[in-house]
Image (cartoon, rainbow, N blue to C red; front, side):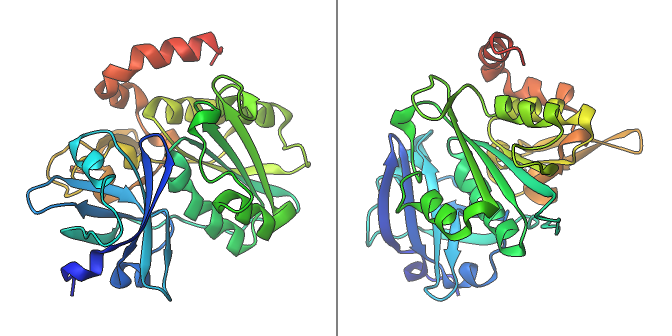
Length: 300
Ligand code: FES
């Protein structure tokens, strides 16, 4: 059953300003969770439903890990929850799991691009590819060195690198150059595409991207002429994840016709090259001008 005690916060970690990681007791979800899936979280009985990607889970301990960025009232409230507090409800796992295809690790690499809290969304998918035996390249962007998380040697990315060694390449970038390469995640990706191979001579088998809609579009536009299969996870656009609010509508081109799909039911992953970005992006108008300017500045 989904009794209250099942959703107790076991650990609260402040990752960066406004970003919190929580380990929560949820044995039923942990048992069947797969990479790419999410949960629907209710902090209090009168709160809002918030969809959150599963950052990690542990079947043996019966726990799930969520990374929450305090953006609105509900997420800010969640970020104040500490050890011993419990969520009113957590439902899941929801959404279609990621397709994890097997590639030749000598000749091909699976490239992930993520910005900020996109990292916890790609982490389990990248891990699933590594467990399958694929070579993985992760391009991770942060705003600046002040916004880092998971990058230390004893933290998630450090531990993943230690475990997989040469099977995992990690490229960090930041907008202001205070951590890793200065620039956007699209810059190293573009270099790889132009070379038609990565620095280690591997071809890009596919690209998986999670981040703000404009970033995912920029990635999609970059890879399309090269015909590199590209997956975007549109979890960031979901509101209640019930299939009812319609906020997550994605126009997808299938057989020359526009199909309206729901990210929360049909996704969260979509073939980026079938998403009709021109129809889809105006809904994110409040970010657009700013992001387009910044893209123009960086010649995207
Ligand atoms: Fe509301 Fe999908 S998020 S319908």
